[in-house]
Length: 164
Length: 287
Image: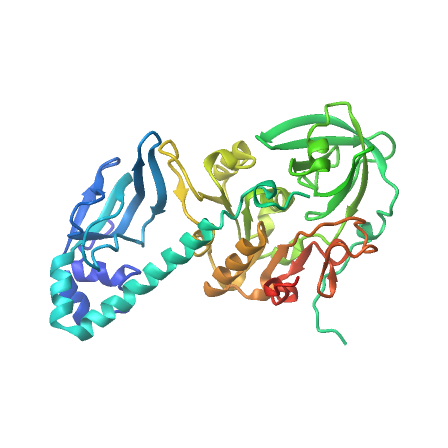
């Protein structure tokens, strides 16, 4: 019979790509702000303009970041997948989400209380620096990929003045 | 002595010459709003034999000639299969050819994908937009040689769900054992349940063993640059990355110089190159 092991929140955090390799003392501290959550397909993790009080480390299922546009319905601006982080607006004021985050399939995630984490980062700037070092690459990568999409890479040549 | 790395040129690439053979359109299939696939057969002689990655010059009488990659199955020589997007006068004329119409064909031309390099390794094909057409023969080849490859991954990015080329075939491949297909689009509405994002984001999650992977890239040049970087970041050797470049080709056999990229004539020395051979040229503004 296969053995199943129950992992502590700190172990789950340490295994997630976002926090892998972080000082165990810090993941223990982070664990105090974290809890495991589940969202059924179609449920929203958060909606635009709500307070950015919890962000998520995605462990299973996918999440669509969306905007609602009058007359055009929901537009998906990006999808996020296991191993990725859902939400970055918790880092900076005014701590409000800019997009809707919808579960695509059943989502398993670790939710992190943003106010709790911000408080711990304020109390321990060394820890805060290490946490920010984990989030800055995520934000930078999303900026870079967004820029690539702005180029409209796949536009037909006729649309970019290169029809031969 | 030049330190530029080039690939061996097959005999077939040297035999195209300037004289077109007359072909007839046997079947025409619309792929996208501005894109059709033609299946053509020669009026005389044997069907054209080609290697994945090669192209032909298609000549519409009285209109002109363009270079088009071959997108059919190299193991099935019955018809010459090519997918064309209508962007200019000649490509518009090619796309407008009806079944039974005749056109001139020169080729096959160019250096093919070095598919044998992938034998015994993981093969990853990264394609963007219409770049799936020149890579489709690799996929046919890989499927025919599945037992000799560790795995086959297709990473495909395009503008929007309605711009997915060969969509039914991609769906079929995604249900094929031993073949992993990842599709992402730049933008999507609420009826799309797949990925939205840049194709480079799919590369690392779909790699099995970077040190044992050969990657072949085709798409917009910027996409290929970033894809090559993503592969390198994930641990794939740049020597194992190949890409297909595109420039305005006129003669197709290295005479006219229209498709020059630094020391290379793409029609003759390419279009397929090992990445290290062209990496630095791809960031030179004047080229």
